[in-house]
Image (cartoon, rainbow, N blue to C red; front, side):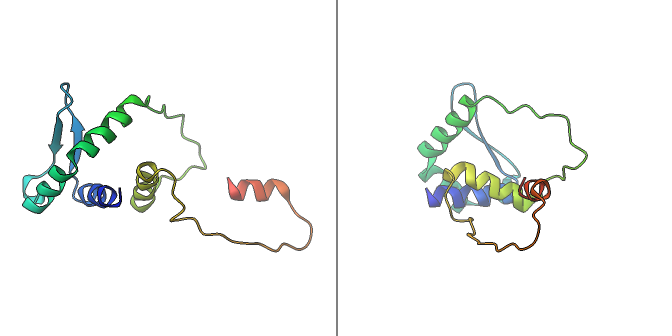
Length: 117
């Protein structure tokens, strides 16, 4: 699975998209010069896993965007990449940073909830 995640990250960085056509064949979209023979071979080596992953993501209904909130800030490319990796990796704890907080004084619960949300 790690090789698959790394390959998808490289393809994403190069702007190369993978999709399935109507007959469930793997199709590659992107600039030809960015798709090296090594990348092509890596794609071939994990093709069944890629097809399976794409079939699973097509089976999930699309998420409807809600009206933008004035307080929302768009995700950076790095945040979008981390989100993609978490979707592929199944919620691993690789990017979880445990922390303990010690608070003193009066606690504004609403402010704390907003900060964590």
